[in-house]
Length: 206
Image 1: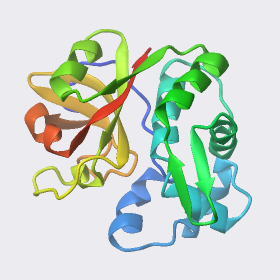
Image 2 (image 1 turned 60 degrees about the vertical axis):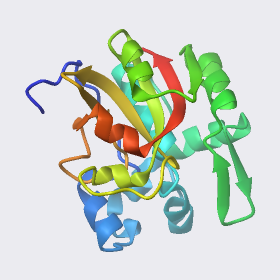
Image 3 (image 1 turned 90 degrees about the horizontal axis):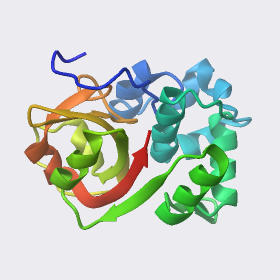
């Protein structure tokens, strides 16, 4: 853990069952179902797991928050089903998903877990940092390219990470599809992280 890490320990949750396999899955196209732990996420078929593991960044962030707050919760598959039932995800056929949709997500976590949250839009990480210094975390929309923050990026948004600390001009975040050293408690300078930031997300009171 970085020496200047400012937050209490926040559990890390990957999009995949075994976070040590993130790199093999992302870089080397490993079939995530080669990991026998996949079934422990509540999925009953390999195809269902493969489909959702690519899209579970928001649910992985939520799991980290729930575990940090010591709130019992269902399996990942059941959480996804609950989120869909509340409109936080909308399935388009068999091959695509609309979501995470912020407004129904915020209503869902308030109703089911008593977690207060609000949406931010058209804001920079400087705005987000003001809340992170208090009892809040942020689920923020960034490009997946943030897993390699030292390289140029071509996009902003499309992926969700959990920002749980800020100190000395750095954001500390969990990237559900991250690769070490930018996976768990990743320390990234705020101005660098901003390159990947879509300027929107959810501020969550913890």
